[in-house]
Amino acid sequence: MKKLNIGMVGYGFMGRAHANAFRKVGNFFNLDYQPVLKAACGRDAAKAKEFAAQWGFESIETDWRMLIARDDIDVIDIAAPNDVHAPIAIAAAKAGKMVLCEKPLALNAAEALKMVAAVEKAKVPNMVWYNYRRVPAVMLAKQLIDEGKLGRIFHYRAKFLQDWTISSDLPQGGAGLWRLDAKVAGSGVTGDLLAHCIDTALWLNGPMDKVTATTETFIKERKHNLTGKVEAVSIDDASLFLARFANGSLANFEATRYARGHKALYTFEINGEHASISWDLHDLHRLQYFEHRDEGRVRGWRSIHVTDSDHPYMDKWWVPGLQIGYEHSFVHQVADFIQGLQSGTPAAPTFRDGLATDYVTDAVLKSARSGRWETVKR
Ligand SMILES: NC(=O)c1ccc[n+]([C@@H]2O[C@H](COP(=O)([O-])OP(=O)(O)OC[C@H]3O[C@@H](n4cnc5c(N)ncnc54)[C@H](O)[C@@H]3O)[C@@H](O)[C@H]2O)c1
Image (cartoon, rainbow, N blue to C red; front, side):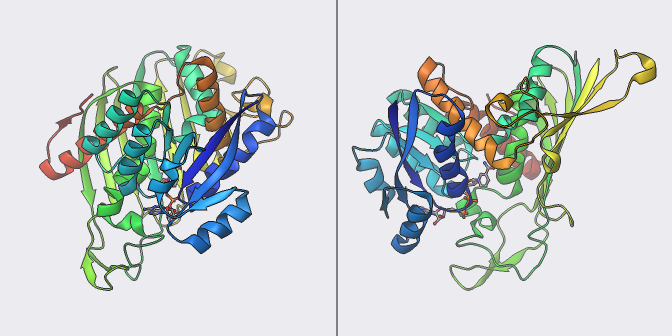
């Protein structure tokens, strides 16, 4: 089996999710490549060492430039905050490394475009970690749509609700709270949460033509952890938009960190001529499906427990009826990336696909400022 030497930047939430996926993938999928955890990179040597020991990385680096300079690294995996995605990815591509990058691809579409240019010029395999595509129930939704089971699509509805920033005592910036600082995050919930909803929507329902949006920053000032001063909050706390898709369907999207009681409620519903589907991250192994062409007396919403061996990815796991969870979506994404290397057909979403989401988030933020419908670039 060929080795795929991984150099990973960032050892936080996503660092753990990715490391777990690289470790497990070869146990459950028959692949020609085996990921090897060569080096974990973070700025704090003691923390990086601790992380490397816990997850089985062979070595550490404290500067991503040194990681990229190493000859024994094949893949640079970016699991660090959004402001470092572009410099790391561009340098990695120039050095001829494969690049995996967390979402959103960049702080904005202009930066994302440079990343796309870099990986395409260097002809290096690349992928963005929009992992929800790899939840079996979401992949099943994709299959049903592509088979035409829904018929013409009329509506797409998505939301991503959290409640962790409601307290005005919560500071902004620095470790753990970089999401509240637009310099590091690019935007607030638009790039953080809506980006997931948009990626899934573009994949399931095709391109978007235009959007009209409104955003709000409910708490205007917070103490900044890096300066110690109370500073203006630069992110959107909530973001809502309407969209028109190229296929003629209408959509509404909502994301907020002020929906008391909701922790990570990502849901979507799609209504077609013949059928509807809906999905809920809090119940991620189920797909709700309504088929109008069923016999009238038994017609109703089905709750499909997506655990059978003919469901996407599920033949690789346990026995029918036993469900899997969040972390498995990352294992599936690594498996698909490797299968893409084997077949020569790159696994989506590539950087170019990630750029499409950044074009939408840019249009959403532009519309929130202008108060007008804005065209989505493609
Ligand atoms: N796919 C998903 O579902 C999902 C979920 C959460 C986060 N994310 C994305 O993953 C990325 C990381 O988010 P997180 O939640 O893991 O953040 P985190 O704060 O938990 O971890 C970030 C890590 O990056 C490190 N880091 C920061 N700057 C660095 C630098 N210059 N060089 C090296 N390391 C650096 C930090 O020390 C930390 O280890 C973000 O882009 C985020 O949007 C994606």
